[in-house]
Length: 163
Ligand code: ADP
Image (cartoon, rainbow, N blue to C red; front, side):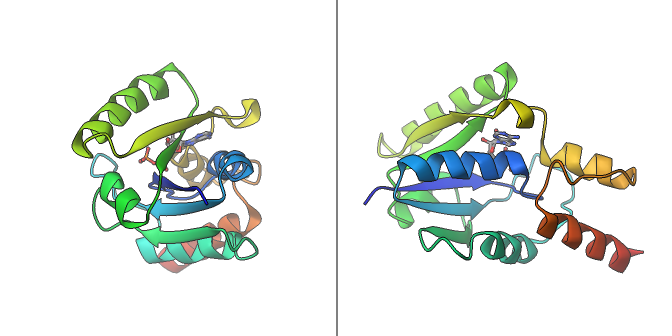
């Protein structure tokens, strides 16, 4: 059984992320989605727990997908969850530059134990990011092309609650 870790902020999970999960699941037996803190990102829309329960709900029919809240680094999460590699998604050259640096650091801090496998974004999802989704949502525009209906519903509920 080959298990891999897909770490990210997932604030919220988009159809782009879901496509990377789909691609990875075609190749690997088990996948752990790890919700990580990214200190470079601004205040989050959803709490970690909300992200956890939504992603769990999305994948409730796939027993080979597990969802966790990352306690430490992606490398430690990979080791603690018995994952062979980290999965990441590439949309552009900018992603490539960032991800190639990140995989190098992760390889170094794990003493070569944790490698990274990248999948390419599907062309319709190349421009989708969690930040774009939040921005379009704040403009009161339709986000159904970018996120699953469950996520859209939860964004509306959360926005109503915060009003
Ligand atoms: P992080 O804060 O770790 O970058 P994100 O949730 O923004 O977390 O992204 C997690 C991973 O998914 C990253 O490798 C990112 O490049 C990739 N990703 C994000 N959006 C897409 C998309 N639309 N298509 C493919 N990969 C994506």
